[in-house]
Length: 204
Image (cartoon, rainbow, N blue to C red):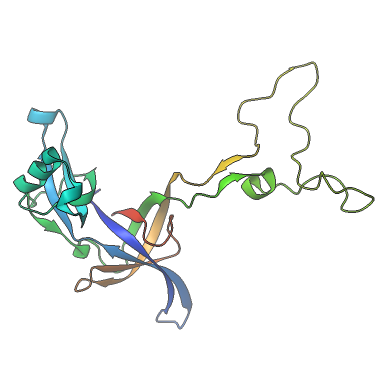
């Protein structure tokens, strides 16, 4: 599954041939540079390392600078390994033309972080207690979390308040609505994880 790194631009909507309004996400996909090819002989596995988004040289360590120099490219901010594309070699660019309109892709990204949240927001609990009769402090409480003397403990995985978001999320089977090779723009149906400006991985 060859992939391409991109940046989430935002959401919009387009009309299809039937006149239906489709919610879509706009992604600036690539261009990515092939910075390394890993093989079974040298690394024990085969993979293709690609890099995306330019980075100032003063913010790059000497070792990284040399690594990018081998690929004859400027330092990059984001690097990831994907499956090998046969006709690509170190220094080549991979563009949005890797995808076709009407094809299906998976998009991975880091979801929006929402901090420490209670059970009502995090898990959709309805809360407990009455909204009237002097009850003001238990409206969004989780309620009971375990049984009595048997098993005398709280089961692992019990839904409670805690950290919400800021995790790697993959949205599967998004249809490619439009491809604009001249602008490196990819328009996919539906939403993708992450905030505007966040980096995402698009896989074919």
